[in-house]
Amino acid sequence: MIKLLTTLFFLLTSIFCSGQKYISKPLAYKSCKEFIFNKKNIDSTIYTINASELQSLIKCREKKFTLIYVFSPTCSSVKNRMIDVAKLLKEKQIDILFFSIDKDNSKSLNRFYEYFLKINYTYPLFVVSDKYSKNGDKKLKLFLKQITPHQDYKNVSRGSIILLDDKGDIIYFSDYTKKQPIKDVIQLINPE
Image (cartoon, rainbow, N blue to C red; front, side, top):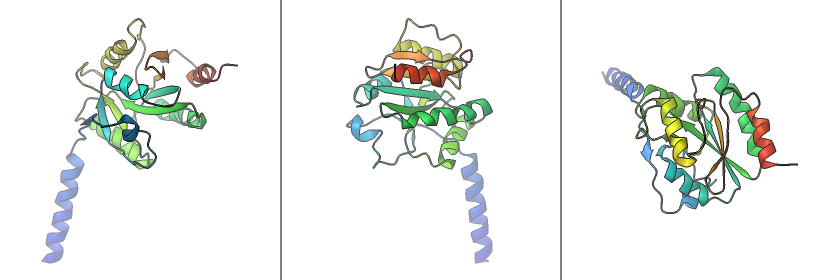
């Protein structure tokens, strides 16, 4: 009887947990230097972020550049490009943030979270706030317009690479028409 109850408990727990969707947390911290990029602070939470919060976070960083990679675990070309993006971790003057543009409390956001847990990524992840839009591509464009309004973000989407300077301004972004965005980024951060 005890074995039956134990088995039933684990079965119901796994069914319940597998049906849950991931809900991001609001970005809140006392000191952003404590919150993020602290190797002692292991945190694989997804935080909802808006443009002003991102700029505030970047301004308190000590590195010269911040690269945002708009990631999707369901797109193989986006996952393949992540290998090239990860090579930029060797660059000492750049931080890399992984963003989702999926809706909060969605299966897609849950897959985003599970993918990074699977590869043992132990730093914060970010989802662009739904206050911009529920549509991912539109949400990303409106988010970027808040950061640097004078750009045309016509083709940005999942797989885009966005480079910001230490003031939080966008100095480069890729879209699906750019063939070698990693080389473009390396030239910007290491001009010869």
